[in-house]
Image 1 (cartoon, rainbow, N blue to C red):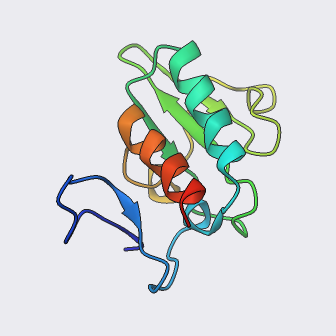
Image 2 (image 1 turned 180 degrees about the horizontal axis):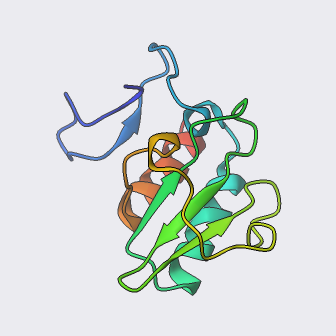
Image 3 (image 1 turned 90 degrees about the vertical axis):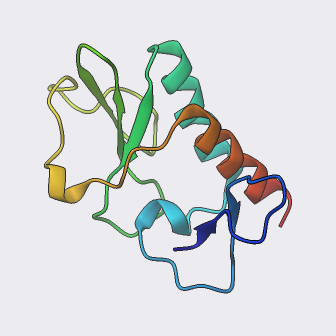
Length: 113
């Protein structure tokens, strides 16, 4: 996994660029993509984000998970996904859930490389 906490005294999630990227969102190097994700996570009072696992990894679609529902977003525009934003993507096509802190660490990892 390209994100690791191993060997990190602060136990922060950091990107390990020596590994092979496994998921599309892990190929994204632009911190602004993750700023858009974090903005939607905060604005929609989400507790986690899950990234789509299909695609090339330029603008991974994602869904924000709340206690009462999910909200899907287009990764390119960060706007609600098409005409059915409240339907979940297929579970097998989603990453593990990441917290707000994880997304903040993904931004930081891209700023410090």
